[in-house]
Amino acid sequence: MKQYIEIDGRLPDDESMSQALVGYGHFTYMQVRSHAVRGLDLHLERLESGTRELFGSGLDHDRVRHYIHCALRRTSGDASVRVQVVPADPSVLMSGANDEPRVMVMVRPPAEPDYTPQRLRSVEYERPMPHIKHLDTMGLIHQTRLARQAGYDDALFTDAAGRVSEATVANIVLYDEAEEAFTWPDAPALPGIMRGLLRRGMTRLDVPVRDRPVHRSELENYSSAFLTNSINDAQPVASVDDVSFTVREPVQALLRKCHESNRWQTIKSG
Image (tube, rainbow, N blue to C red):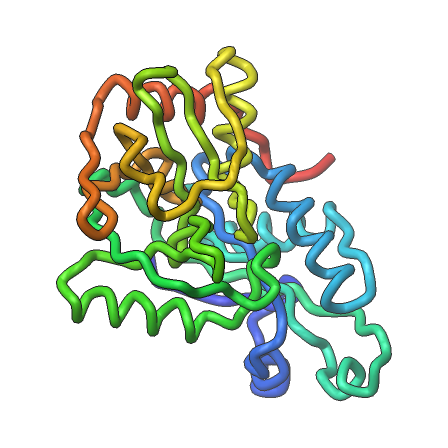
């Protein structure tokens, strides 16, 4: 399968592509299997809330589902799909008025989870508007590049007070073996879709979980850590700086069970 793009259900012309590439907008990224997605409702809610904040208008869920369904017609129903909300006319936004945005759908081959343990370097960094999955990714790519140059796999962000927030493209969840409980660090970060699915699964399966601020110096109090994003439900963290973690397969399996407890939601509406 080759990557291809549609805007509002059609192959884009030069004008619509130029408007879409101004660098303003937001997106969500999902794994589709048999024309269905786990957490489709969470993706749609993310798109709607981000559109209201960035464009001053709503985004109809059925419209988005229709465009995704149209874009998948050249596939078997298995794909990686990125839905991006982009300006119809950037000049309208720059005037201070609201804009009725366009919906760009990018289709790529399906992706599988990566369970390779990651070595992270902590760094003080906070994405602008961290609660939105927006298009300003230069800082993330730069921090990944710096981490790789220093001999690590990726970066783990902390805020100015030293509280752990997120990795470059993932949330982090910690496990306390003594208390047999998971902890999501409480700091400004993107509320990832996988994080939402895991939290639903934890509630469903009565898995102990808490939210609390975690200072960089407190990481040594946890036995295991995992990265979660739209592809990975439980990618182990081998270390953060000089703090090492144990890859505990039963804990990793529990996270995967929490994820898999969420049902697949069909894309086609009606």
